Amino acid sequence: FEAVGRPPMAHDLIFAACVDWLTPREYDGRALLRLPADDPRRRVDRALAAEIRTAVGLLERLADVFLVPLKEYLSKSAHRDKLGLFVQRAVLVPVGLLPRGPVADTFSRLGNAIADSRRANKWLAGVGPLLELRASSALHKDPEWTNWALRIGAEVALFSSILAEHLRWLRQHRIVSGPPGPMARRTNRLLAARSACLLALLLLKAQRTRAGLRLRRNAAVDFGLETASGAVSDGVGTTDGGPVGEVAAGGGRVAGEGSSCTEGGDTGSTLVLGAEERALLRAGVLEAMRLAQAAHMGHLLPTHDALVGIMGVITASHDIRAQWRTSTAPKAKAA
Image 1: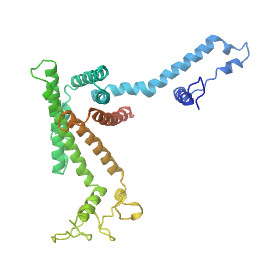
Image 2: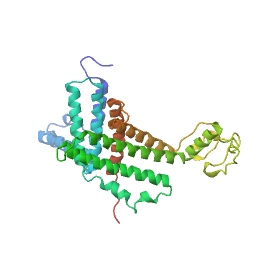
Image 3: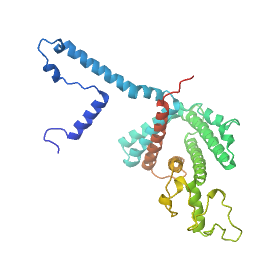
Image 4: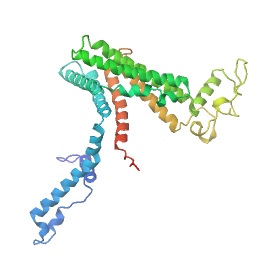
């Protein structure tokens, strides 16, 4: 319960936990009062020196835990761009929810200013997609032609969107004649095409996992395309087992191993997703959110600014978290 005239207990507990985490050394000022009066440790200069050492230790811990990793993180242009995207999407939420007025206009101007700085920060950012298109890159070593085509399409769309963003920036500052608005829509439509290619690629990968193969086989049985014994329903012949594994003896549904197997060996419809399936599902949901954002910004499928802002905050937060882990990971020492 909250006492009259005192802050809630939760505030005290949170503040004490933060202080203990930042200053792990225990300091009890009352211990000085229990010392003899002639003890030199009771001198004011000694007490002030101890306080200064504690403050310096606090700054050192803050630097090691936060400031040094932050400096390393902000040293890369892509990381700063992702932070700008996070703020740019975050301001869309109040812009979409608040009525037209000074507050909404302030958030809108803030978003436009950050977008302009991101465009200036992206100069020569198309080098990355160009390197992916070279014949010696890992992109061209994919044995599946569909995967290769989708990867090529995604990189070409990304490179084209960067070029369109450069042209929009030049038109916005009247270096090149022409309105910037059409280039903004074209940029987001190219980003939507990139997200569509990546989402299709993730779906192709997902259907080749054990869970995906099992779902595809079970759907074929449910819709009558295959029989429970594995034979094709139109009389063409029986399946050779192929990549879908063995047919369950009890009912024709695939009883996959590992991640796609139900608990206890049951061959029911409940799936237990493994690490690979969960990673693909997470990546697919995030890419679908990026596709919705680009489609909204490119006027392909308008939804709502607040919804797009929330999805943008989620996707940008995930990317920032991954970038932070990469930048703060311990570097391997050269032999």
